[in-house]
Image 1 (cartoon, rainbow, N blue to C red):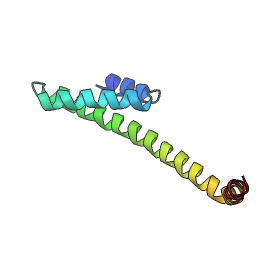
Image 2: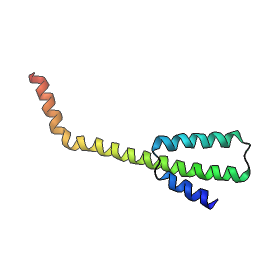
Image 3: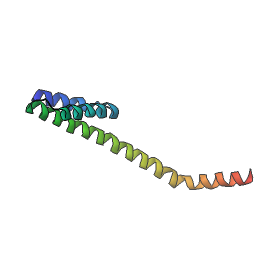
Image 4: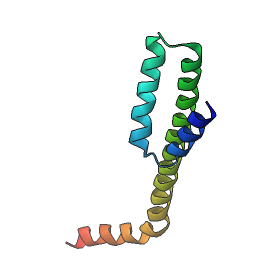
Length: 91
C-alpha cells in the first residue's frame, strides 16, 4: 500500500483541475456502488482525499487570480473609466 500511496501522491502533483475532478467523481462513484473490500475502500477514500486537495488547490489559485484581476482594474481603472465615460459623452 505504501507504493500505491506514493504513486498516487506523486501523480496528484501533475494533475490539472479537470483531471482531478473527473477522477474524484469516479472514486466517489466506486465507493457509493460498494462491493469493494475494506482495504480497497480505504485506498479509494485516501485517493479521494488527495484528489479533493488537488481540486481545492486549483480552486484557491483561481480565486486568488480572480481577486487580483478584480483588484487591479479598481486601482488603475478609475481614470480609465472616467476617460471612457467622457469619451462617450463627447462622442
